[in-house]
Length: 277
Image (cartoon, rainbow, N blue to C red; front, side):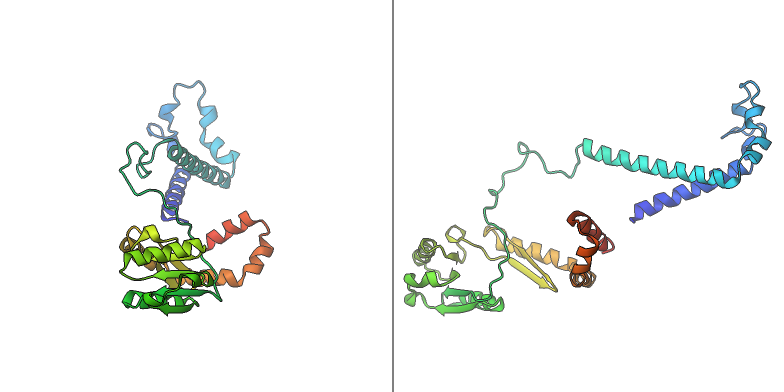
């Protein structure tokens, strides 16, 4: 339950108790007491005493009936308020929604790269280059289980690219990098050319790994630094509580499927497990 909901229920509870106390304490029946159900408001009604006599109020119903009625009224008012709030949010434009296309500022064209996580256990990769960048790319691939071959540009053989899952060109020779890219595309092999998005068929992303999570952020090669900044802002969200809850749900996956055969109800129940995080 959110803090706003708790505060709302607390206010309703106090209001209900005060209203019930005023009614059951017969404060509204004091002559000249000009609020609520005081006599001041009913003196123009013929024979009003028949309907608002103290004895009629006290003796006709037990006190718990009034408490139940006031509590029910409070719940109904809260439900009505939440419904009106939802209705207003769906019918009125939100100041946080994205501007229309007519008012939007020019931006980069929509991404064409398809985000996917590949389970590669016997994959081979070729890194062409001899500098620091080439070495770093090779180390990154090895960390994910790739068998990596590192070769110099002079020894590159375009006829062998088909034997690799992906190829990385990490040289400063633009014509040579283009030749590597063309050879890989002809062989339908994934290729990445460092600092040249137009020659790439895939892009590296800014990655954060913790527990069962792998978060990858990509700018589609347009600005790797921006992807790194966004990755760093996401990092604090991967808390120990989030990881512990995720691992617990993974261990109990069979029980969840048994208790919630329907995928929608199972997803809704699992969402509640993360509500406190």
